[in-house]
Amino acid sequence: MGNEIENFKEKINAIPIPEDQLNSAITGSISSAKKRPRKVSYVIAVAATLMVILFGSAFVSPAMAKIFSQVPLVGSVLSYFDTGLEQASNEGLVTSVGETFVDRDIPITITEVYYDNFRLVVGYSIPIQEQMDDYKALETEIKMRVDDQIVTGMNTHSTVKDDLVLGTIETNVRLPESFTLDISFSEVFNKIGDWSFQLPVRKNTDALVYDVTKTKEMDAYTFEVVDVQLAPSGTKIHMKLDTPMSEDTTYDFLVYNHNGEKLELLEEDKKTIPLVNFEKDVVKTSALYEPSEDHVFTIIPALYDDGKLIEMKKLAIVVDLSTVKGKEISNEAANYGLIDDKVDQETFLRNYMVEEIGSELGIELGEYSKAEVTVLSLEFASDFQKEQKINKKNVVKTTALIEESSNANAYVVYKTEDGINHIFEAEKVRDKWKITDSYTFEGKTIVDLEMLYDNQ
Image (cartoon, rainbow, N blue to C red; front, top):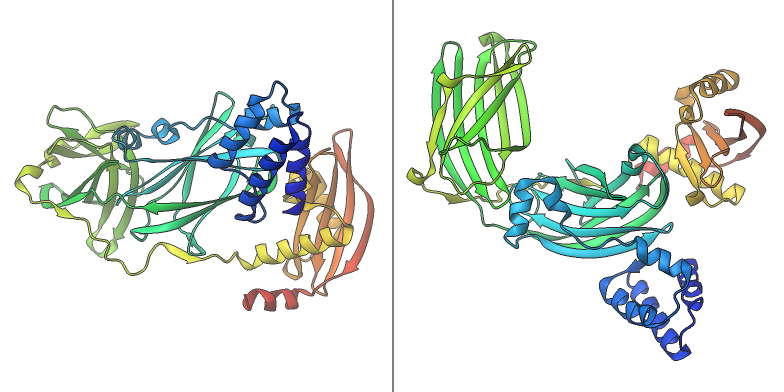
């Protein structure tokens, strides 16, 4: 924290502005930063104060100008990904955030958040500061937590647009009506850092469920629509299709409004359950389609045959929600989609080993990328494993620490059962990695680390 504040002061001190204004700006920013340990935070209120001083001056330091130019303008990232979220945004139901944290000179902005009975979605944006391929730009490590527990079933979607990474973090597991959501990015653009946000979240409860339970039969098929749920961000339908037992037939479900317009499928959770004794499969589906103000839907199962989607029109079910009384969707589950925030044992052992080695060598781990040895090259990894005669059962997994500034220097490390850390310096010469030096030092044994892990 202290180093970050000092770096921030140095950037401020490079600006030729009146001293009394400068001291006021620094005091305000440090006071704000203390509320969030280990972060350099550019929150809107602080940014507004600094903006008046910075841009009120005729001169701006190049370093500070670069940092501020990288912070993206707050926009509707959610609308970019999803027609359902676009409609929720147009109706003013999406909460704008616009909070930016900077670490490793990379600003990440949380743009907005939306939460209803169907899903929790958070939008973010990251400026791309240097030339890199899209694959590298889109690689991120993200966690969502509620009350220090990990949110399960989380997934992310991201894309590159106009030198920005735009992304969403989403889950459809059941969560409390309101809570504080912790979001942390631990790796961006292959750089390890700490970008953390705390967001107050409250559910939009403007949703109704209509119990339908309508069934159609045709030959060996039985199709059932269980219920239809309507919320601002989409139309969710629970369905079940009994089919002849098959290994490779794929089924989809199409939904049309009363004008014959097909609703866009946004998300789908589909499970096929084989009932061997009855010689049939049961396809259970919970599908989220775009929102619709219509109350009459035609729902048709379809199957793929030679790459073509064939509608099973004889199984079509027409649902008129105006004839069914809608009910509030209850949040009855006592167990939410949360698990304890505890990494698996292998990751714990590996992280501890790397921290031991970083401390012993006196290196800043944030300046190194942690990766599998195969990242250096498959040939190097294979030869290294053979030369060291590593028994994978009795070592902490071999890890490469690659220096980001050069991408040509690395440490290859592993720990044996007795606690000895084995360190190999490697250098990239003419596109080939070679070991240049090696040494060992004693740390905690694997048994000791396993006990530490169990007692967390």
